[in-house]
Length: 168
Image (cartoon, rainbow, N blue to C red):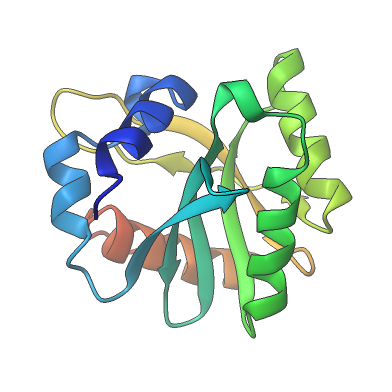
């Protein structure tokens, strides 16, 4: 991927260390058939990126970020709408709990696009032994998820995305 270093800069500026992979880990998953890292271009300028997992029961947006100089111009919402338009499956993403202004605004952003906040206990497993797990929440499109569906989603995320290999 020719623009990996530019994407990597946006990635590191957009996510706390515990919520992101190392460069080596990110490059390794590029060969995973379930995973696609996509650039977001507008007017021939790299505006951002997203990481998408095409899993058995749903699509998982692991990361989406817009370059901080280009935020607020609608690139993120246009990208999410395009992902929704192309998907024939439920779409899942993780968000921080609504404990601060930025987290609340992020949840509102996704709700305006039709996502629903699901109130289940959920932790993103640590990406490796140098990082901490992160207490997050799951958002889903086009509707909320039931408890048994949440268990399926959590298991698939833990086993396919995070390679955690535990069943709940």
